[in-house]
Image (cartoon, rainbow, N blue to C red):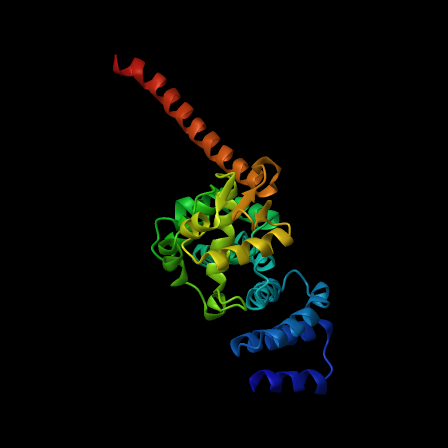
Length: 291
């Protein structure tokens, strides 16, 4: 009701471009509070065409617009776009934006990236988030963010993600994140199965349908349904042999996501190597003082 009242104001009065932008952002915010994401998207789009007229000094309106845009993309289940928007916001530098709020935005970026469809774009976003030092230094030790850090680490290093990992993450999700899809899976379930299929493609040359179901901990028919969709969308390099009952994976090095995951592992190895070098250097400097 409040959003409808504001839309009437937008029609009845004449405003400057800056005033219109602020009103449209307010309308979009109100629609989001009422779970009307389609209408919110329409008014965010209207505001986007006017934000160039808003002076940089009016930073709070620019921030509100960007947050509202990210929330709208999130609510519309455009998770990868939302992840990028949230992550950009989490890197904002302003004395009036607290580090706690920036960390919350980073957690939202991770949530959306984890829920997005498997593929090269998602792998790139996950790799970027995994390399952010705030994840291990600030998020991992905190109970409310530890599940984000755990699942992100497993997905970026090509490990299988189990139901217990997702159960902890699901406690932090909003209702629209846990919606049931047309195939009967929730969004987190589908994202986990897709990731695990890609992870298995880096380990095995082929799997029987029974082995696949056991490893994914779901029915074989459902596993094959997800795999077939990923293959048709070019997000999984594999083929299904119905005669022999096999899911046959193609060579992992041709898979863009495998290359990106390898890059993440290499970055981790380099970090450990540098740390060891620094420790040895410190030891070499201290040893003469102790003798």
